[in-house]
Image (cartoon, rainbow, N blue to C red; front, side, top):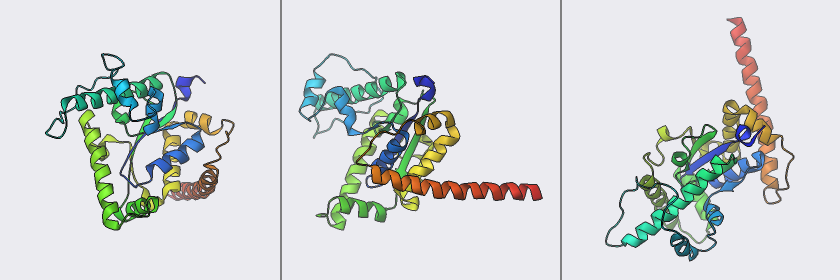
Length: 256
């Protein structure tokens, strides 16, 4: 099986606090593929915020078209800031596209990836949402100093930033169900079962690729070992239930 034949890419976008990163990590463990979010910058040589300006002046052109970007210049933002932001976005989009073009399998969170990679057949796009109570609990667990009001404000601010960034570079709207293959409310199933749900959808669409990645010799993932065990246990139960439902459906068809 060549890289292209086994290639599998999961594109995820999410509301703040919905647990999408944890879901992505669970899938990454199961499929043994890397998860990119902010760490995509490291592939561009950006390890610190100050490195962004050096990257901006690295060359005179961009590696990806950002002509669809709407102007955000206003009294609080200078034109050069917008150019630097657009150039950095272009370099990120170019890096994502090059990884996909090289036949790499990976999970990418954010970065308008469902649009950047829309011409690749091996891509599944997912949007993760959840109700406010679920998200608030997770945000406040992450930062115990926050009050409910502060956590809600933080959620709204981060979601606004994500929507604004996405819609500035993409023809499609952030969070609109028609732009994604799957939209999942993570509070309904929980994070582990949400990961399993996505995995089963992947199996239905890309069984050879998923089988290849699931059956690779397991690498050592110390940090996520417990999560992996939880997913495997939940997956076994859910698949057993699924098989029972299939069997019952077949029996009903025979009766008819």
